[in-house]
Structures are given as structure tokens and as C-alpha cells.
Image (cartoon, rainbow, N blue to C red; front, side):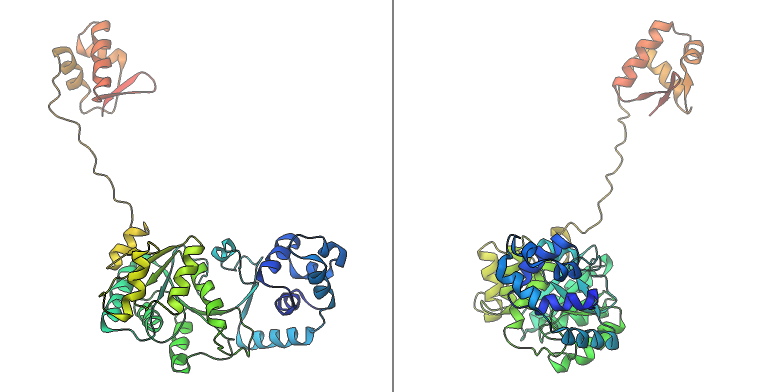
Length: 366
């Protein structure tokens, strides 16, 4: 009998079952095993499944390939994160097209309290490099998980600066974990893993970095991030796709502006111009926009020392000042005021915020 993990892989290989249908099934059955063991009639009656998809599930039999994938995962320390797994990036579950199964190598918490995707052109300028360097330095004290695509340019800068600032960083890949693309970033990927970061993909081992895999990869970057920060990009390209996806997922998008004549900034400027991204010029801007700065303590307001007190009120105030609390009987006795005069003075002092009444008929100066 196949294991639960083999059934999870099988669900990603079943014809006619995409991410949306798989999510419907996982939410209904709770695990992959019960999906494949369900009767065809039961599956066919489900909204979004129907008889064609039901027959596809019941006829799947390529479990040898599933077992082969699990052997690769075990050999290389790869974790399988199914939709119902607690370790699965929970932010992705809010996306309608959540990946059915993720392959993860690393130690970084994919459900960190703060996550930021930093993306941009593969041919960054010195301006873009300086933006990334300053941004990561500003984020460093706030334990933000840094996400990017491990591509040339801004992605590489983001991962490297995250390592320098000792921030956890995860590369989201458009291929299997048997390799790293581009190969020039193999050393960087190794350092990310050694530093407690990670590599994440929905592609099985052996999957090549084909062109059509990158847009689907980008939805994972956008879906996992609290905020997507675009540093430099032209109006076309992967960064613009990711920003659009983040907008569709109702996630925050921020962009660094650039010269109107600079092709590397045309995309950022367009996002800002069309209100698809908020303008930022520094890491401080990002922290403020995301409310990641610690709340400032409001200075304690001192009571005005210029409240005019009546003679009776001054007697009570002087009597209570310096005590943790005096009983009403002791106040009456030591103030040498009548009970009614003392009560009237105490009431006025309370209304002025000078005196507070405590349990047990005690009074003290605030």
C-alpha cells in the first residue's frame, strides 16, 4: 500500500488535478490517502471535481515515480510540505491557487512572524545595489524572513545582504532541488542553507528551469510575503508579474522610484503611478509602512502643578501627599475639618484628577 507521502506526490501527478482542485480535495478529506481511497461516486459529486477528475484520481497508478521522489527527498534531506501540514507556509493557504505540495530543504521558519520578498531586475545598477544594501541593514534588527528567487541581480543581492545581516533567507526555485539555477549561485545557495535559510520549490527533482515554471514560482514568492518590495525593474518581466500577483492576493507592494528615463526603473515608476505600489526610498520607510517599528511609549503626563486649591482642599492634599493611602476616618481626624467639608474637598480633588479613592475607603494623591 502506498504511504501518505506517496499519495501526496501522486496528487500532484494526477492528470486534470491542478492546485485549485487539489486544495478542494485536501480541505474536504484532510489528507491525500483518503482522497485516493474515496469512492469515485463520492469524488464525482464534489463541487469542482466531477466525474472526469474523479476517474483520473481512481485510475492513477504511477506510484513507482512517487516512491522514487521520496527516495530522493530522504537522501538529500528534503521535507515534503502538504497543504494540511502545520509546517506548510500558512500565508499561502489564503491564495486560491496554493501549491499542493512543496519540497523544502533548510531550517528557516516558513511561517515567520514577518516576511518580505525583495525582487527586481537581473541587471541592477549601482543605485539598485545601494537600495538593497540599505534596506537589509534597516530590516536586520526586526528578524524578517527574506524571500527571493535566487536569480541574478536584485535577487542575489537580497540573499547576500540577508546573510551579511544574519537574517534568514529562502530562495524560491522554478526547478527541482537536484540543482541550482543559475549554477553561478550554487555557492550562495550552500551558504544560505549553512546559515539556517532554505530552498523551496513545488517542482519535483529532475524538473528543469523551463521558462513556464518561473511565473508559477513567482506566485509562491508573492503569496508567502507580507510585503513585496520591488527595487528595480522594467515594465515587463518576472518582477512585474510577482508584483501583480501580490496585488491580486491583497498583499502590500512597495517600490523604489527611479529616473523617468531609466529603463531599469520604468516598472517601479509604473507601479507607483498606477497605485499598485507605495513609494519608498529607504528601509525606514518600509518599517514604518509595515508597522514593524516598536510602539513608542507615550510620555507620562504630569499633573499640572498649578491647580488652584481651596483652603480645605490644600489641607487634604498636604495631608495625603507622601502617603500610600489614608483612611477616611484618619483624614477627618487629622485634617480637623468637618466630615462634610472633608468629603466635599475629597470629591473636588478626585474630579480634578489629584486624588484617587482606593478600596477600603482609602485615599491617595495620584
